[in-house]
Image (cartoon, rainbow, N blue to C red):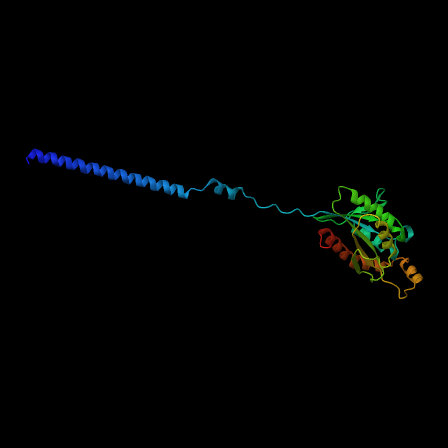
Length: 254
């Protein structure tokens, strides 16, 4: 082969090598692009997943149940307002959040705002009736109270005297029998005709005479409450009564 033939052969070999090199580079570029595309696809986050966590919200806290309490003090009116039988009337002014009770014609007797908290309010009512005739008066006040839209979840509380407890002590009872208390019996009878009404009863101890004869007991409860007994009742019974009202208002006592 001559010199010219060798040069042509060399040029063809160089062109063949260059062509193979270009093809190899093109293949490598295709592989790199494919790998980058695959990597990008595998690491992307679907829109539904990326927004789900941010759009989710924690549940709202439950609203506390608001209770409206009507606390009725029963006893005797007029000159008998300061007797042992009217222990509830004696203590009632110490439960008010104002200076005094105010006459209320719709309710039929004096009222005043009482203890309240974040879940309850209290309206105090002083029955103007005689003890043994408490029922109709309490029934009227209760019907008015529970029919008002401004009194959600109405609850009835009766504050009364309690012979079976010494002065300064408190007895709490939900529903049940009147236990021989004429005022509670009258209330029970007056409320019996309508829907079932739960009654929370708070008894203020006034002690009792040694004799259990009816006349002796009647004389005892109609005597003026001694000043020292008032002081003991206010000092010892009042905090207990306030706690019971709070427990009813917050739902601890249902």
